[in-house]
Image (cartoon, rainbow, N blue to C red; front, side, top):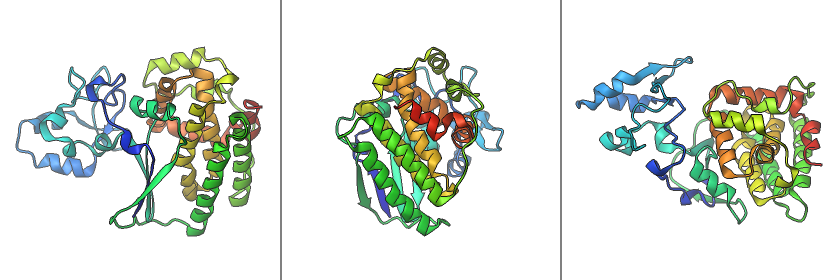
Length: 319
């Protein structure tokens, strides 16, 4: 299998109890089937503690029930994981072992990156001075079975390289590059599957008022946000755009909606311009949106169906 990662991917190191915003707080954690099978074999008292906090969410998934203050039930008063201490990292849930890494499989290619939802990863990507580039390794893992349209995959793969080139073209200001990017996305969408953008139903700030609140600080940032166009033309904002293209662009192979992925990259650049010109703000957005099924589904629906995020309306922020 070919494994593609950002060039800085291996630089990430979790700072555990020193983290300013624990990933073990605010989110439900799925108990994956392999981990559950292992927990059933335990013959120690810790098994009783695990069993006591297992629950079902509204989707029927088995999760670890959070405490009243929305902390993982295994997060101790030093912000360290009691399960990790008792059983070792390899027996913590899959989500805990991999966060903040994300994995996208496309047959014989696996793409792995870091999410802005982690403050440390957010700092790395925000402060990256060199280009947001990628490394490729080959390992012995077998391809992941899928029903991907090969022709569409290679069309999108080539198109994504063009999108990278547009965003990284430092001969012109980033605001102009982003306008070119979303126009290119519209062109790609018309080639793949045409759809007509609809009229706006909400205003721009309402896009960021999520129904599921994880951190009240994000709500306050949205309420107090004011657009500062000067923030846009920065290396940090370029990095944000590349992150979104890397993470989401190729997923259009499944739903044929490449324009929403491109628009998400443009809107990503607007997050620091509206709500705070720092890595912490992008971290809060990511934790609030990318890691909430409810909020992310709502956001995808707005990108696809609400004219507030039409190509024309997004472009107005950059001209």
